[in-house]
Amino acid sequence: RRMMTPVGSAVWDSLARKNWGKVLPWVCRWALLYFVMSVGVAKLTFIFLSWLNGELEELSFGLVALVFFLVGFSMFLIPVVPGIPVYVTGGIMLGARGQSEPSLGFAFGVSMGVICSYALKLAAVWTQQVIIGGMLGSHVTVRRFVGVDKVAVRAMEQILLEPGLTRAKVGILCGGPDWPTSVMTGILGLSPAQMLLGTTPCIILVVPCVLSGAFMLKQAEGGAWVPLIGVMAMVASFSQASAGLYAFYSFQKVANENYDALAAPRPEHRDVEELAAKMKVQEQTYDDVTHWDNVPILPKLILATAAGVMMASCFLSAMAGSLCWRPFDLGPATEITSKSKVEDPIELGGLGGSALNIVRPLGWVLVAMFGVGSVTWWMFNVWAGRATQRRLKGIKPGAPS
Image (cartoon, rainbow, N blue to C red; front, side, top):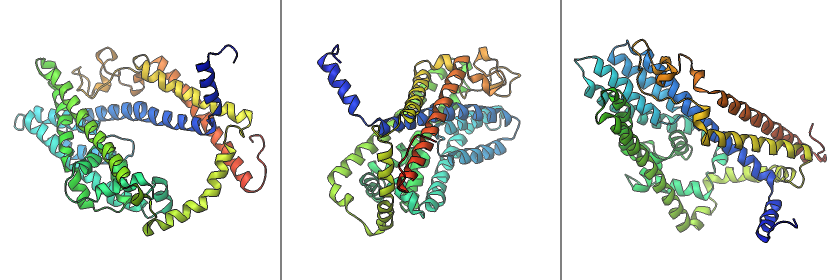
């Protein structure tokens, strides 16, 4: 400390006062979310859809459209799968089938790609809201977990209750993540018809995604097709980002302007508030047990290791991704003998017939690091849970068992 500058000393004191028992688990949670979304979902989704496109190559246009709709609809029901890769695949799959049948043509295939993608999006929204959200909304523990009694959620609910098409409503329904947004509307018990109406402008996102995939079929011809792929992808990204940013702005505005009304207790949330009161003692005990000053040295080392390793693996993936993963996209196969791009040679942007080839040697190191971090985080959570239960039973927690 004597060798530190005043600024350095102040920073050190600030870090020393932090409750790392609360900070580091959040580091682990965000690292897990990043790894699952950017590594697991993004890469596995692309590989699966590319493989599926190759497997459907010999089927008739009608069967391809039907399989695409059913598979796309199923993927929309998976919480972590985004919609954009599904739309892009629709452009590739149906555009290719239309192009291979002279009686139909490329334009017809692309048009059907847009129609099928749009239809499956609306069908998924209804299913996620009415069936999944409706079922989850009947459980008070779920409604407490998502915070139906919190100002932020009530602000979103107030925006979505507005009839018709408003910019804020469209921003939430079209700019938010697919599964969580639709399921939340079901948990809140909102009108399915109004939610479908508010989702209809998502066609602005669907069309450029489908066109981006369809134009990949034409990139071998050169000319304007290649830059158009990037332009369509940029339009799609800009559309969703703009809607999401406007939704966030609307949240903040409604919450700030109506804070007192939104924070006031409501009769319909009495069961949630009663459950929160029952859980308060347990949660306070957990917070006390995991406060950094109260955590024994071994659990401290375990948690610090988990957070450090998981954060390092995410940093490595983000900053040195090309050294960890081979490039792969949803484009059509390059080799005539390949059914899909998965079967293309690695030097041509394929995976040489094995999905595991997307991982380079350094990528396996990264996966192993993340695995170690996940296991050590789990070990800390096991200790924290047992220590909390012992405290609640009146037994002073000791070293981790």
